[in-house]
Amino acid sequence: MGNFYDRTLRLIGPDAMEKLRKSSVLVVGLGGVGGYLAENLVRAGVGTLGLCDCDRIEETNLNRQILAVTQTLGMTKTSVAAARFLSINPNLTIDEYPIRVAAATLSELQLERYDYVADAIDDVGAKLLLIRAASERGIPVISAMGAGNKLDPTRFRIEPIRKSHTCPLARVMRKELRLLGLTEIPVLFSDEVPPERGEAEAPRVTASISYMPAIAGSMIAGRILMDLMKK
Image (cartoon, rainbow, N blue to C red; front, top):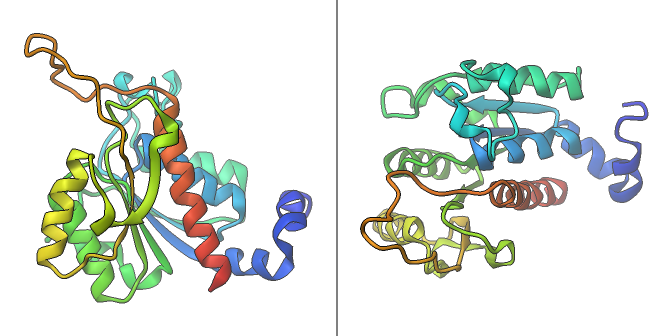
């Protein structure tokens, strides 16, 4: 693979490097967390990447999403991600899925093709559908909980969903996954209590800052990469 991966090769060795090259990961959701997650997989040497997102890049994404720059506004996130990642590694194999995850579209993702699934969706129903489908097929899956309304990066952790707490999204997911018998699904969550706001101050959209999604996505990527190298 030439000089591109030389520094990674020095760290993990040729066997692990080859495992990553032969690995395939599906990243569902290419927003703040998912964009950084996917890019870390590419730069580490994962050979095949599935990219799923139905959205286009908007101006409100500029504060925290690695795919969002003024030149990409209005473009589909999957196409922007594919072009960016191929500019990093031209030998990368990319599957684009510019679709919304739903019962009617799930089969289009061809989950069986992948060694690992990363859930970075912000819709509870879609998250549950994806996690359940991956689990039923025996495909490892990891899920991102909420990264918004948070400031402290040291409060992120990866634990089985049954051990999650504090995070409102994790609370909902924990309840629903328990009903499905999926209590050991690893999730990234924060135990930071968001600042209280008066009713008049409560924002209509989730507040966010640049570094939190980046750290969350990088932590999930690190977990996936270590699991793939152990495989």
